[in-house]
Length: 200
Image (cartoon, rainbow, N blue to C red):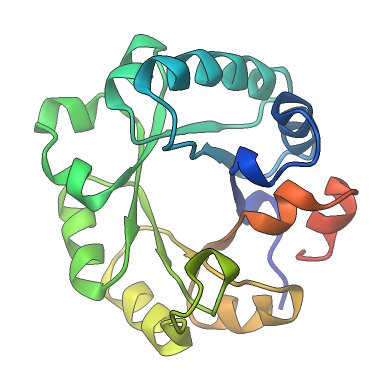
């Protein structure tokens, strides 16, 4: 069973790019995945706001959803409709702030966090890391049983993240995930469209 391109979220990491980051963003947006999560947490909030403004403009040209990350005030200043948050930030947001984002995601690493994220008005979550990945060197993946338990306990879409390869997509779908998140490969690959097609 395959996952369609509309069920792929791309997570950015500009430090992995071999070209100007905005050029890579243009290629990613043109491929029209489900969304692009602009995860550049090393930036100051003011620098992130500048980058996010440009990223939203690029994504807008292709009707690709741009999901901002971490910096709530920057997202509000830009009128962003979508944001993805670590649980520690999500927990501290008042309900009216959470409600101001029609699309609200969170990174979950346990079934308990997944339930909490749903109770805190998230419209989707990411669950991981599922398989061993260079981004989490030395840490074993939580595995498909973990993913299945998360998918069974919440009613919102769950996107698997961490060490995902084309040959594991079927098992991820079978575990109940709504889609997948890709980062390293999509930051480095020479052919964005071809790379995405290998997962669909």
